[in-house]
Image 1 (cartoon, rainbow, N blue to C red):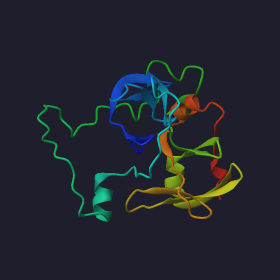
Image 2 (cartoon, one colour; image 1 turned 60 degrees about the vertical axis):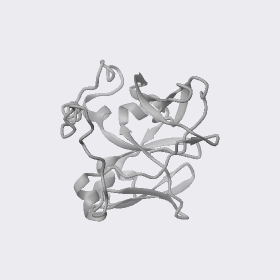
Image 3 (tube, rainbow, N blue to C red; image 1 turned 90 degrees about the vertical axis):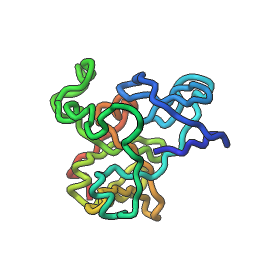
Length: 196
């Protein structure tokens, strides 16, 4: 999730339908610049090079969210369109070992590329962490880019918090390992036995 404020201008975004290194590009309606979700910046158009501020967010289920925030209101599915919002159009993609358009060819073997990861960039250095591993650990820490960082997974809400030693929140991007690795080719991926 990002702040829509860029240089004191509030932008509105849409999905372009285009891919950049296996990641869907957004566009802003004000300038029609294209924005990479994983890079958090515009990759073409008048806003090229401008960055978006990543905001803390939670990847969770509606059931888990409701348990933690029962007063939450949601948008109605009565949108005036005939789309069935109860079905995920990508449901068959998630468990499949392969990517789309042969993207894994020569890059990854087996299921490794489709692993869901949490990507962080700290002091200009990217690193990815297995989302499943972080969920299983519950609370853990790691040394990265000269700092100790802490991971806390809340089983009730499904919320993951990443923070520095002083408590400052570290923004992260949940994505697939193959997407993160294409955007940040020098990125390391944590080894489970390295987490403390």
